[in-house]
Image 1 (cartoon, helix red, strand yellow):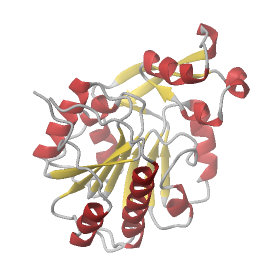
Image 2 (tube, one colour):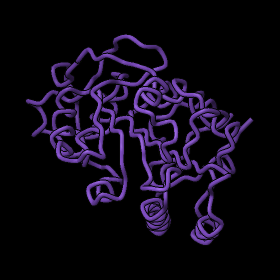
Image 3 (cartoon, one colour):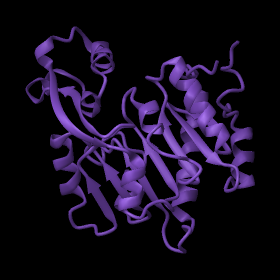
Length: 260
């Protein structure tokens, strides 16, 4: 079984991971896309478009075109306003799941935001327990602090087809424990981005095993960087990036997290 990585505690290793991820994003921002223009990415769980977003600076500077997906009506308003004048960024107010319909999104109620650190405003999940666990790091969480909002959900492959984004070069997923469900909503033999970036800190072992198997079958190699897994398709992986990851001691996911 493949387990989720453990967060890195060594400061020098966290620094190396930050540098390596930054280098990867810089390479992507300076590379040509499949259509000869800028690279395009799809982000599931875009929040307000800026909070804890590793791609914000590049996107705001015009280095990428993007499809940004956010289910929270409140966060989506900020996201849409942020990119209202950018024709190269499409914003979509919907959730992603493997079955289409309606689900409940859980997030911190607005009237309690001042009682929590800023990062808490970026927490929203289709899994209530994941949200409560994250918020509990700062103290007890009362029921009234959790806002439950019904939201429409669709499959990611539907979004990709409707917006002609099957050739997008990157996929970013930040959904607080709902990652496996998002991965089940897309066929990676059809949609083959160069890079997939997703958070691992909420992954259960069975979900980690399923995601690792799906990515491995689709010919991706996977590295652990900060709180994310970076999966790079073997057909695109530049040799100099692989060399840098080795020099910086960036661990491949699965090498030291595999158990019987």
